[in-house]
Image 1 (tube, rainbow, N blue to C red):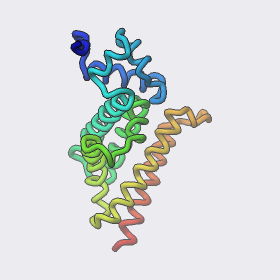
Image 2 (image 1 turned 180 degrees about the horizontal axis):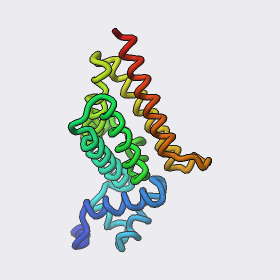
Image 3 (image 1 turned 90 degrees about the vertical axis):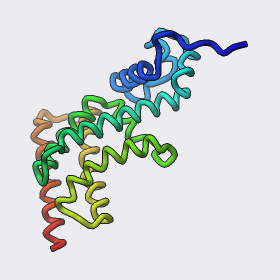
Image 4 (image 1 turned 120 degrees about the vertical axis):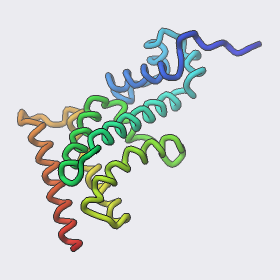
Length: 195
């Protein structure tokens, strides 16, 4: 008996689009094969022609997220350097992550060690941060620490913002600009200490 044929018009791209939409609307943990199938108007077994089960759907969301975030960061950094590049990179990171909370969450919960394509997409995104921060540090090992510090600060802010963790009425934009100013002051202090 021949295996069932894929539904016409349904492809991996469309399945990924629907998976990302679910994750962004209701959270990465809301993504299930049953929900994805219902969203696409198919039976769950039909999805297996396009994704390798729930893990495959989650991987597709993570890959889409890493590529989207990487594109946003590269676009923000083009033609900029120093503090201006950090400000624009930070704004792009925040804007993209808040606009795509499910895809962003997927990028943070991915085991890159086991997947060459995911690792390459992550490297393309993070290489932009490395390039921008080389303004303050040339030593590659110390640069890793700077990148981790900046990413951690940005990640913490967008995680709190996306999760509605900031309950006071004060402007989030002002708070974010202050966070970036602190990062820039820290980068300057780091560079001054290395002289």
